[in-house]
Image 1 (cartoon, each protein chain N blue to C red):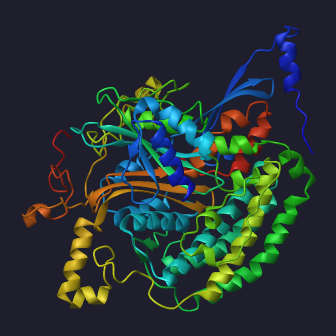
Image 2 (image 1 turned 135 degrees about the vertical axis):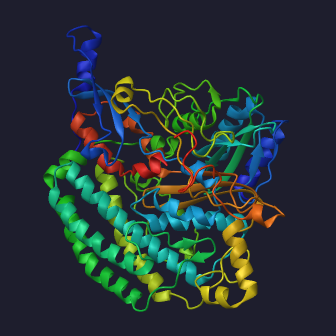
Image 3 (image 1 turned 180 degrees about the vertical axis):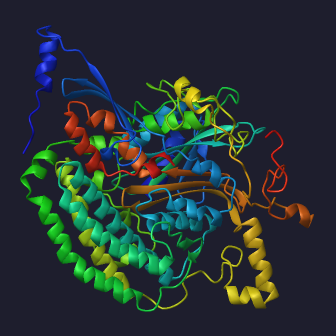
Amino acid sequence: MPAALEAITAVKGRWAGVTDRPSLDHPALNVPAPDLPAVLRSLRDEHGFDMLVDVSGVDWAVGASPRFTVVYHVFSTAGHEYVRVAADCADNAFPEVPTATAIWPGANWHEREAYDMYGIRFAGHPDLRRILMWDEYPHFPLRKDFPLAGIETELPDAEVVAETKTGAIAAPMMGGPFVASQGEINLTDAEPRAKDESWTERRPKPDA
Amino acid sequence: MPVEHTFPDSAAKNAQGEFETEKMSLSMGPSHPSTHGVLRLQLELDGEVVTKADPVVGYLHRGDEKIAENMTYNQFVPYTDRLDYLAPLANNMAYAIAVERLAKLEVPPRCQAIRVITAEMARVSAHLLGLGAFGIDVGAWTVFLYSFTEREKLYKLFEELTGARFTTSYARIGGVARDLPPGWTDRVLAFCDQFLPILEEILDLLTRNRIFVDRTAGVGVISREDAIAYGLTGPNLRASGVPLDLRKDRPYSGYEQYEFDVAVGTKGDGYDRYLVRGEEMRQSVRIIRQAVAKLPPGKWYAEDARRIIAPPKDKILTSMEELIQNFMIVTEGPQMPAGEVYFEAENPKGALGFYIVSKGGGVPWRLKIRAPSFCNLSILPKVCVGAMVSDVVSILGSLDFVMGECDR
């Protein structure tokens, strides 16, 4: 039996709340958020999954519950196998899971990114600041209720604002994205089109 | 040869209150020649010794992951060019394989071999630039001129194959965009033949160069444990003595058929990282030669994947069935099963990973890009402390990162 399967069997035997997670490739586990650090530590110390390769937030849709999940991918540098560990955030309005920074210092930036993009907080994180967006940015851009075009936002630097007299503006969505809605019966509706057609080359932008 | 710093001494004296120095903060970048793009470092200095380094990333953030959720799998291929824009062919391949893992789709051997050849050429071109830029960072201009000339020859070959020098968009889900042009493999072999002696010349300019060795040996040492704990991958990890290469350890695209060695460092300093990259170029040439020699005949795309790969253009224009198939793929995207996959490929900068969450249909629900440069840079706050300001430049050059990939 591969080490990854052995590892997840052992973890399932030790923590009652840990269950199998459907996966198309690597062995995967669903872990209750409070057990997350203990499970990750056990995977690293007892089963040789010594490298944390990725931490990713997932938003399962605006009305979904649980809405946010954090997915960790750990890798064994000796056995060359991956294990996926997922933890659902209990509170949809204030998503939070414990941090893995005490186990892998490399989790620091990954978790900052998940916070930046989804607003998922990592309890015990030493430095939970935004990483890709600027510190004062008010939104969480990868949430499903954040529009693709972006939201008009003020820039953080007053001097820059005074000089340029502009902020971060929403992108004009002319010409894209061209994606047909799934399962539409009416062909006219299913035809690919720009999502925002309120203005075109012929029709000016409403508030311009 | 280890470089001695005065930092531990002065810190100890400081603690005893023997002399007071005022900490100075220095913002390095985001527009600085040695930050290779738009990285900014907030440094706290005691004299010329760094006491704290806080990298600020995100200046090149374009929201690739958000964009991916709003388009079909095929439409995202050109965006992967712009991750590590020094090796777009390798990114294209990593992304295509990730989606193929989701679709449980096998591509024909010829397609696999073509992808290997292009990915290894991309590795050579990326390392050539990395070496040249590293040389400039520590004051060796000539290397850059030599390595850029060689890289230009590779770009000519890329242009012939894909129509573009930089943004190749060559891979497709289930294949590659087109077959190799006639005579192209001969020109690749000719490039390999003339490249190896020049590569030795380029490396000779640095390997025994007193200034280069002084600036890199013992500078930016990353221990084996730290490299693993921070999730470093690629040459930066191997330089620290971990023989991890996904091409060997988790072979994809037929890498198991080719013989090559994995270069591993011993000390984990900037000089080791340089040596590892140099050796990797020799090994890449080895792989390219084998792949060209073994290049199997056949199709360059999966013919049976009718709901994923568009049919040939002449069929679309003459046959109703193929026209409908093409229309469905263009409008609704290639049809994928629901589920989750995570795939990592050994790219020039390290392991480029794609985590795809699919709810079925032609659009990913979530596409997370695990960028090697992002992880490799996360060790900066640790490795810069205690270094001189000029060492920071050498460390950045030796880590060989790309901000397009780091910021996504």
